[in-house]
Amino acid sequence: MLVIASRGSQLALWQARWVQQRLSTLGVETRIDIIRTTGDKITDVPLAKVGGKGLFTKEIEEALLEGRADLAVHSLKDLPTELPPGLALAAVPEREDPRDALVGARLADLPAGARVGTSSLRRAAQLRKLRPDLEIESVRGNLDTRLRKQEQGQYRAIVLAAAGLKRLGLEDRIAEILPPETMCPAVGQGALAIETRAEGAALEACRRLDHASTRAEVTAERAVLASLGGGCQVPIGARATVARGRLRLFAVVVSPDGGQMVRAVCDGSPEDAESLGSQLGARLLESGARPILEAVYS
Image (cartoon, rainbow, N blue to C red; front, side):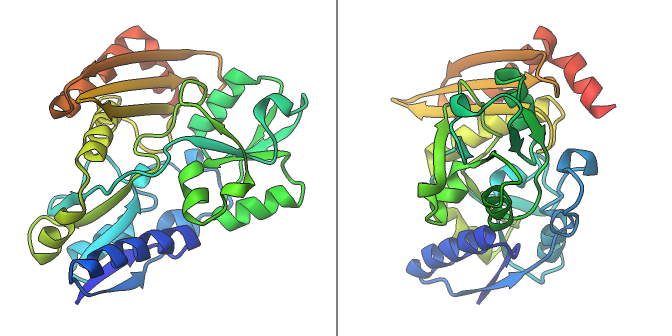
């Protein structure tokens, strides 16, 4: 029996159970072990200020390397672009909706000065670009906690990943889904990552859950992020789509105050996903992203 490592939030467990069910249909028996990560333990500080990569993955990856778990299910946007030696991204199943969603009110309906909550520097920066009259404030906690804070009136609206709301059957809470051209999503948003040791039975079993088009999309997006030196808590957005045999990639870098935005787009073969992402990242740096990122990292 294989052991699945998962965070303990409602959404993380939904994702782990979804993978468990998919593996079960392939005749693979599993059980789920819950592991608390650094990101789960620090709930009173904005993620961008915590710093570091792997806030939601480090302890889980240690369990894999030590043999206490055989596979891990992550939200791909939480997974650093460089995996520890000995681990592999075994599968990326078909993606859910990658876009961001507003809960509480539509963007155009928010009055000046309205408080909008988000734990993401990327979302906050793009909101400030779109609506500099809003008060953007940090909101931490799992999905239920953030929704409750909005219901209680602490925020007029909050921004969440549409995928998480849809997976938990909370699609009716969405006031507006923001198109990528308005709010460029996080790298890998809406996709799951199944991580295993670099060899063994778990790797072979999980490879059967890989979805080729989704893998190409997230490979391109993660290559952008890697070329920019970014983690999951920086103001970088990327969205790749595969259609009719072509991959289109769009990415942005935004200053935290929303005052500056650098955009770039390219397209090519899905087989060249990684090089396309790297090239687009280099173009962003040449077009003005470097000083924005240097200011964030300093």
